[in-house]
Length: 539
Image (cartoon, rainbow, N blue to C red; front, side):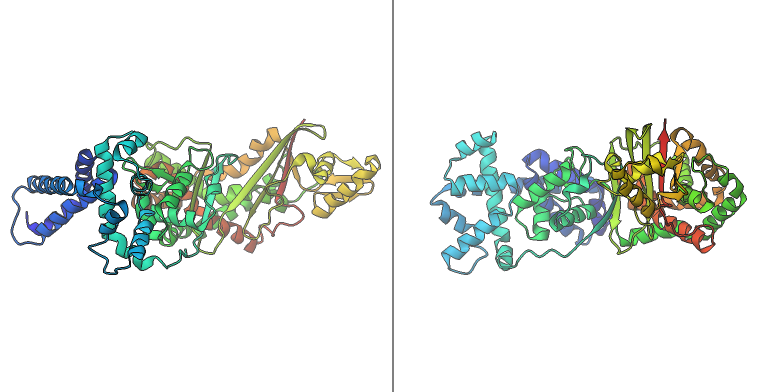
């Protein structure tokens, strides 16, 4: 094998094996990383020479052992030097090879600032030994480790300071200024107490997530990238890993001490590629849905809603969420059966997925709240759909039990005589009329928003779900094939089990396209008078 081909071998699995070799001999992630870098450097130098290597693996491991031998000799030679003399003088020596300035105080301050960028284990021994004046034996007792390990950490910390104190001096007056970065993160499931988005609101948190999305990183690497002391980064990493419930965070910690992203997050380029896979089929999908609605118009008007009177537009808004996601569901079904059926899915109450904010809003949401024993019904549910150009009727903080207008709408499902309304309820009735929940006909109030029996809900939706069966086969098969290729290329291996969320992101724009197409064709008109608000009841 030619020497220049050695670099390609190192870039593969060999790099992880070399790190394992180093960690097994140092039992310290920082020292292992430094030793591994030295080995790779020696191998890269060898690859730049002419000639051939007969047994490449033997050559790699021989080089690794030689570099490790040099590492041991260097550690033995310099280990004791660390402890002689006044602590401040020894610290000063850490910068002697790099600093030319003779100002003792300025040098020392630069070193103290550099200590703040060490990881916790090294930062702690430096502070305990140099600032608190503790012996290595006492530090070993505090850290529950050997005195030799403490001496090794002190040595490694000193070497790191020696190599980087000039870099710190160059940036010591530079303020930490993080560019604005925003994500669009969607969630599915039960968010109460389980939502990791709630611990990622600051710009520092978002930058850390984005860095770890690009590649797994250690706390020290993140600190260097952001020019923020490691102590702050370590704390933020712990928060982002724990999330809100202590079990599911936006980051995960790997076995080698790095942090990587823990949810599917697409960048701008990936989003556009995924969107195009679905959008290429948008014209055909929209026509299929439009034709289906026209063919079943009479069936929709015959559905068992409870209202005294209703119209097709209001009924179709109740079904538009099903229409919008029908094609995407067909794609997911094919992917499950043909491509990713053997991959285990995450088992958690709530999951998130998202993309780097591109200034646009996609998708369509549907929120539902429920209550028991209200206005003569044993169970009540109220839901509303929302999206681009479709305003939410209610959001977080909406409570059925305290909303008087909703109570009037419930009581008016089968007709409510205005003469039976108490004086203090008249204001609620007026609000219900204003919101489009009810209408008045003579002395009677009737519910205007679409109402149905909860037990009939599946039967009502069966009509629209029937479009899943066979109508999109050709288009969905092609999209599934292309999405499978995209997922293999773009989603990290440890997140493959969440592949459905990549499809959810990719299919968001086509949902808006379907709604806009139905409006442009006159099948739908934009919702008004609570046409995107629905009530389900059970006696």
